[in-house]
Image (cartoon, rainbow, N blue to C red):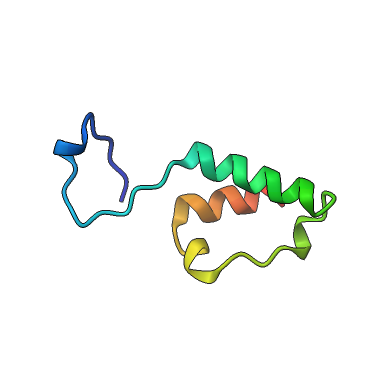
Length: 61
């Protein structure tokens, strides 16, 4: 489930908040560290359980 919120006061807690732009940047940084061989990277399984993050990982290769 995804939703947008305007301020922290609008956020119902507990909540998992993920900045997908940061995730994309981090995935790209890891890809570069691995010399472009993203197949060498084994992300934590709980991370890959988030559908939006899983999609980003798939798109990265």
